[in-house]
Length: 67
Image (cartoon, rainbow, N blue to C red; front, side):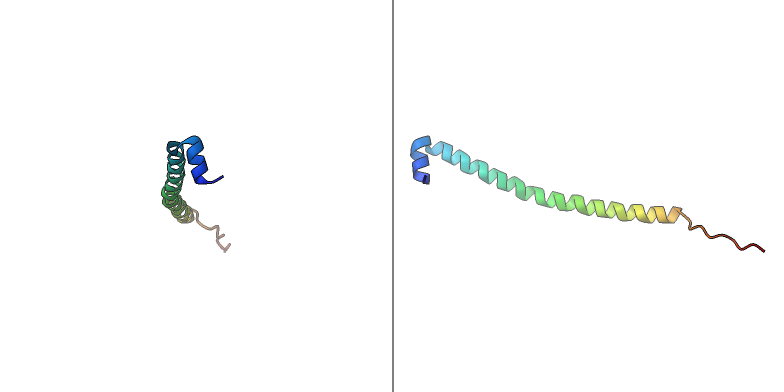
């Protein structure tokens, strides 16, 4: 089935609506990518900060020599 057959059977407005919905889907996907990258970056930063804070509060157990 060609585009012209679809346009004559269902109308050009439906074809334009379908094209608009596909473009909207692609635009939302492009908008989503930077937000996903930002969320992963913030997750990595938070994990690094948590590790540093935990290491600063947790003293390694070093037994004192018995004299």
